[in-house]
Length: 199
Ligand code: HEM
Image (tube, rainbow, N blue to C red; front, side, top):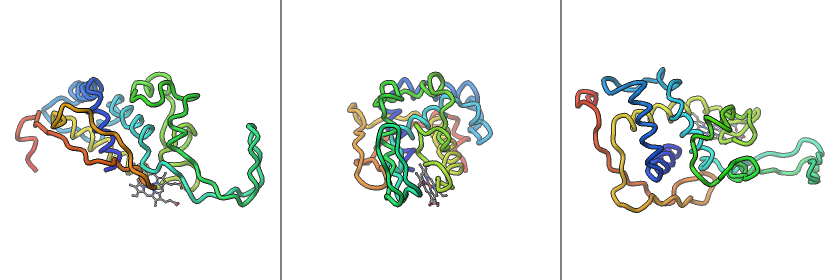
């Protein structure tokens, strides 16, 4: 829910990207049937939007409860004695200007070009929304399936708009979970045949 809220907010503030995902869904699935889970692998731009959302707004921005198992010294000079309690600032890593061009900007395209091989599952340390290693999020696969399918269905089924002309407020809350500080309001207009909305 947190990631869906941020993804919709980002898309509302970047209408070209919103149209591009909807166009991709039109091309690969059309408007005669609903998007299914098996379609997601074809929706590369949608996947890039989800990655870019998790980069800019990782739901768990600080990864906590770690301790150094042995003394170690980083190449940059930091010495970490064994037993030191550690926290990883994923939010900061995800906006590191040495790794990401225009780190504050929403650019899903980067995951189809310069960062094509960077994934969110903990193998690439510049993008760790689910953390990494043996205590990484065990719900990552489920979360990714739900986020992709729900976002795809929403964007396929509805034109999405803001009730006002103002940009969506992107203020983040403080805390262990990165919630949007203000509620997201959206106007939904059906864009498919009425029979596709029947339960
Ligand atoms: C977009 C959605 C999600 C994100 C970004 C996320 C992210 C994370 C992160 C960063 C951690 C900390 C891992 C660490 O300390 O190294 C974590 C832990 C955990 N997550 Fe998730 N999570 C998500 C969804 C879920 C879901 C859907 C479930 C369960 C169905 C889940 C279950 C857990 C559990 C049980 C842990 C604790 C693992 C441990 O301490 O060994 N998460 N998650």
